[in-house]
Amino acid sequence: MKILFLNGPNLNLLGTRQPEIYGRDTLATIEAAVQVRAKALGVTVEFRQTNHEGQLVEWIHEARGAFQVIALNAAAYTHTSIALRDAISAVGLPVIELHLSNIHAREPFRHVSMIAPVCRGQISGFGAFSYILALEAAVNVHQPA
Ligand code: DQA
Image (cartoon, rainbow, N blue to C red):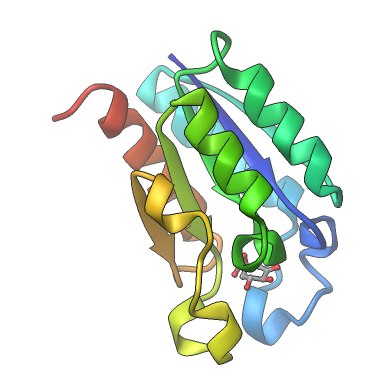
């Protein structure tokens, strides 16, 4: 089983970006922890990050046939992108929405997720551990316990 982790804008700055909100882990250390857990679960994980909305759309398209589940931290595009929502609907793959911070406990504009209605579920507020939870959810979505 292959799971694609997609990361949107500014997540390349994790570690130094507002650590009081996002923690001090970098995306690389988060990926390393996910890879360790993925190995234990016997699944394959690929991690990607981009600051560009269209690139996320293209990666979602390309995932069809190559991955079974997508774990998506769309970052700020979560709150704005109809294009991402349409891409998720178009490919029909299960998508786990994930966030480091609890978007519902932050500014009102972050309470709205354009992608939530077309995702299988949302994980939000557990810091770097949100990625491990998303991995567990992805595996369970594919092979329910
Ligand atoms: C985020 C939350 C978003 O509101 C924000 O724009 C991000 C990161 C998170 O992981 O907590 O860039 O997706």
